[in-house]
Length: 353
Ligand SMILES: NC(=O)c1ccc[n+]([C@@H]2O[C@H](COP(=O)([O-])OP(=O)(O)OC[C@H]3O[C@@H](n4cnc5c(N)ncnc54)[C@H](O)[C@@H]3O)[C@@H](O)[C@H]2O)c1
Image (cartoon, rainbow, N blue to C red; front, side, top):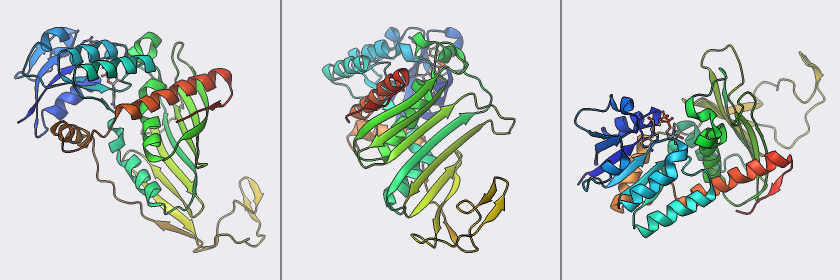
């Protein structure tokens, strides 16, 4: 039998969810709610619309509700959906504090409904290629893992610029970028150092550089800026890099290109050869001799965001576990708290977990 969905919030992400849920085997979207009636004009005619979530939640046919309203609305909506006995799938960042997350989880448990979060970027192909290389251990012992996203036009928009509505880039992209890193790199984090800035936005952060030191010794770097102005087509840059003692890996773009790169001459001192470069004469950073650097193709990563919902349906049936669990989500929020603490003090902070 199809799982019957309701959706709360029909804005940027809500319209995306309508497309997914109306094209997903095993799912049926039967209700959409938005407090702003203007936002409901594009909802397909066969789906019932509401301007008050309480009215939609009275429909006994609805099994599960996707919440895609503004961040500051999540807690009250999660609690209302759970109280109505429907399964809860909330957009990220699910909560603006650990306290809110705990309350939401307790409410879902006491109402005996499932609770998970739309952190679908675990299915990004660039990330999955990076993770496949990391998991294969083909780079030997990794020492640095870097992920970065830079926007070139300087804009943030709508409620994302207001602190009381849960704005800012740490809550927005930060959740995804931290979640990807924590899901990939095993073991506990021991230390966090972060720079978090309001470069041009008055109330909210629009740049961060986070360093996570894991107990294994790996240091993960996560950097995002919305104000990296450049006059180039594409208007953003996305990169991954892993450095290991048996090779490097780079992945560029959301339609990823990149390679695993090795040298044929490891652990040997090379001849003292000077090369004149634009930076002046160099020995360490000159071009390698022919054949010294070898390239390998990246592994395939045949993933897409629809797979998030396929996993969701399978988990509701009891055939799979939810890919995104609340303890994982809590760990991301804890890291974000430590990021704020480090940025405020200008010092690294100890972290357990
Ligand atoms: N997972 C992702 O990749 C991703 C991408 C973008 C946005 N999001 C998340 O989706 C959520 C919505 O973001 P957006 O960019 O679509 O915002 P948006 O402003 O475009 O849309 C939000 C909609 O929710 C409606 N709304 C607000 N409060 C409501 C309430 N109490 N009841 C019913 N409707 C309500 C608004 O009227 C608006 O139409 C946010 O939590 C955001 O972080 C996730």
